[in-house]
Image (cartoon, rainbow over all chains, first blue to last red; front, side, top):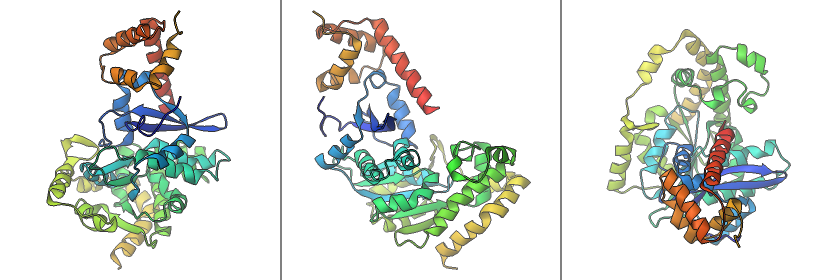
Length: 325
Length: 68
């Protein structure tokens, strides 16, 4: 079988995996779909509901991504979005994704898998190339209007920033964060995978599973959030960094974030993004309702204590750097 | 003389964009299975609708297991 750029222009890499010692990629036919759902996984789930995509998926060695990378138009990343989770990052990505000029890849498992593979293989030297290829494959220009590529990483990828920046030193990035109590309340209400004890040991490697399970959920969440915020603080002075508080949204998307990413929007694009901001980013069929006050009101004593002990000091430092006070 | 069974036909489809285009937009499961069998016959591959259905079920199980 001989594939080329054009054969796979409407296909997307959806999974990175190993066959023995060889790295492979699974592909899914996208048709006319763009990645406009809140998360990469949502779009892929819709696609895999189609009979064709269940039966017919290309599987290629990862080196094939390298061939694609040089064979056709690939948009270089415009900006990276990092975040502490539950802090408005999906609002940012949904506003950007509302523009036909944007390709927005939001928390894509194949990107995270390539980043994470260093922990499970001896393929360290190839990893930078693989990440560049994977993001390149997702950033192939399929429509003439497409101009910008944004990657929203998983929150835990903040711990991988050194590696990501070494591959893409030229790409500006933002880190989004929010009042820690509000984030903890959100996680306690519905856990993210990173706040389930034992699900992602790399985040808190010094904590045993038994200790994690015995801990109040609020404290476990707080420790994970602290780890992510610590990583952000370590890099907060990076010349390509911009700190954004949830409170600055949605205006910051067309303001400081756009400026940081070197973007300028036409009036109709601003209208388009503002329309997107009116809806709940994670459930776009519903209107957005501010919930910060409600979250603070419903916060348990345990949530308030955990935030104060583990995350508030880091939040204050981030705020201090952001505001200059 | 048939070319062979469903797995061989699956490889043919992945190698042939015109066959892909024929199948992309068939969203109804039963109509899709019927079209796959029909295209298989036209290209001298021999397999049944039950085999196609089982391959789809296996693919769905595989995807769900990988996501857990």
